[in-house]
Length: 315
Image 1 (cartoon, one colour):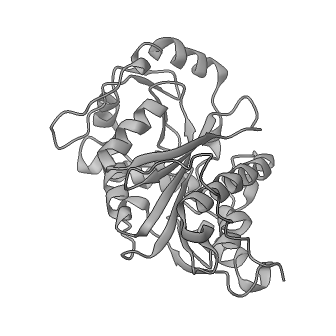
Image 2 (tube, helix red, strand yellow):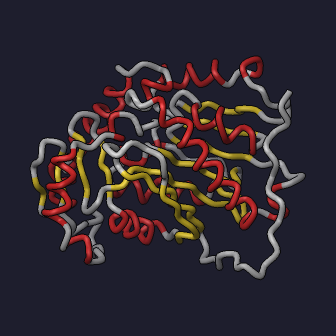
Image 3 (cartoon, helix red, strand yellow):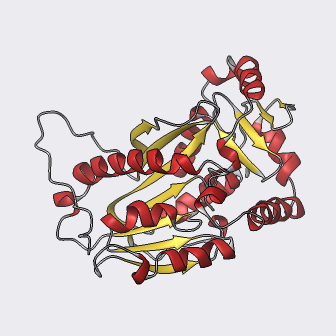
């Protein structure tokens, strides 16, 4: 689900405490042990200020057995079932960040299409998956203008019904060659994409609801859904260090160090990253990661740029 929302916010006291408590720990790269669980020896806090010595300690408490894990995911979806299916609702009362969010995402996407997609995607049938699509905010304002088909994945049923309405042909200002194709009311941890369907899998403000093992399992399954040369975009809140657990909506905000360790576990490479600008100071930092299944060289200044796939023609 679209989890910028209440998770966008971070109490200034909590931010300061997290920074002071875990500054030294964040300098160390975490290496997982050879167990069935992914263990993170990196400390963090919950939204009440409680300290955890490690992520593994926190996960044992939150999802340490099958019933706890079931409750974790049920409570997370339950939180969003009580949220209004509107831009202001899914953005936690911060509807005004929609414009800078889309603007930054579009610039990032354009760069990636130029550098990673043959001919910048021109004259190709491009397909994207919008993970945690919510009411279709990112699809409507961005993805459907660049991709011929967009599938939406969202576990909160009234959000997905709103997305169906928002993305109905009569409510779009793009040509008939661009459409929302499939609406999956399924949580990330249970979703398996069709093989080699997608050029881009966009994951924004939702991955914090997955426990570490499900995070890794999701991306490993999702890799099979990418076409050759396809890539992921992960756009997510960023903790200054360690992690911050939100007790209310059952999600975790991870640090850059934490994310990079999980990417390694997924077998993913960071091709490019970019920080979001223009958000209010009281919100978490937000970072965009372009992730590939192979190690790719970034485009150098001497390489001629290809023309990007143009947005859909406005009716």
